[in-house]
Image (cartoon, rainbow, N blue to C red):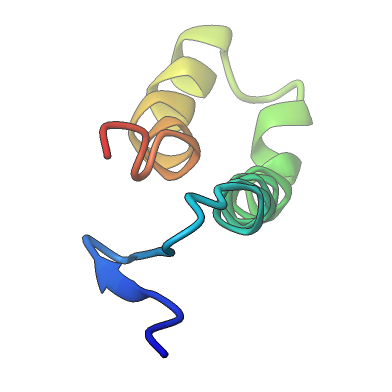
Length: 68
């Protein structure tokens, strides 16, 4: 029996179960955020620079697969 297949890095199942994939996306976004936390919380980095770090490095990880 086919349990699922991978499409664009996401595992699609017959019963349309999205919870495991959503949890995986949230975990990955948290990992990327906490990896950069020392830069984002530091007072020596300007707010504009923090935004430049956040937009290309954290947002795409959080939105990964949202289109599918």
